[in-house]
Length: 284
Ligand SMILES: O=C(O)CCC(=O)C(=O)O
Image (tube, rainbow, N blue to C red; front, side, top):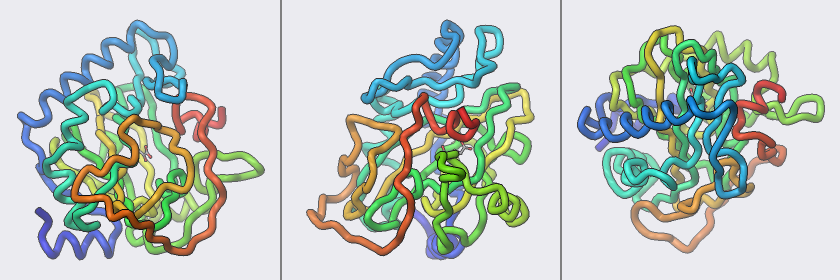
């Protein structure tokens, strides 16, 4: 599915956007389900629902209320909605990731991240790999844009080439903040590129790439379906903060029955006490 130029760009930059990988028809059921969850969130004053480990599945901003819903994450949507499970059965996302990592792929976790208008939801600088270390780093975060992504809507911002650099600590003054140190973040700001594209585009990011995203300044929602997929011989080294009954499933190809490892050192990640890493990043 990917051209030789796209593959080269991915390994050089650490991120690519495959424009319009999914059609409007493909997106419609996902968007409808998302809208249904936003409406449902109006009936709740705080995080609600339940994941496998008992933590809330639906995470909301502290400002969330019936009149101004601020749903910011739905964890493991594939567990509760077939529309999302279908994305892990076949289709452009698996094809594109297979072009980069090889045909044998394992599912790690997925979530729907939303930034509703006026919600103020932001994501601080971090690398996904330090939340979800694996025996090797053939690991990709695939982000499917459920709506058009512009500079104003709070796009993913990525530091080019950072997937080939160091792993930065999420721990500061003895606490897991879910974000890199302030001085690292300042440097990221000066180097970042924005990942933009029409609805249906697929942003493929290496999980070692430094990334963040700022507030949605538009009057429409910004929604990403985000799935972490790995080479089948990359084995998780820590419990996942977004558990799923589908975790570890071979979603394409075959299980090689083999573990491949690369050398690195990092702190053990901390599972957030609340619904998601947004609480860690907010310092609560
Ligand atoms: O939603 C976003 O803008 C980025 C999400 C992200 O980095 C994450 O959930 O790890």
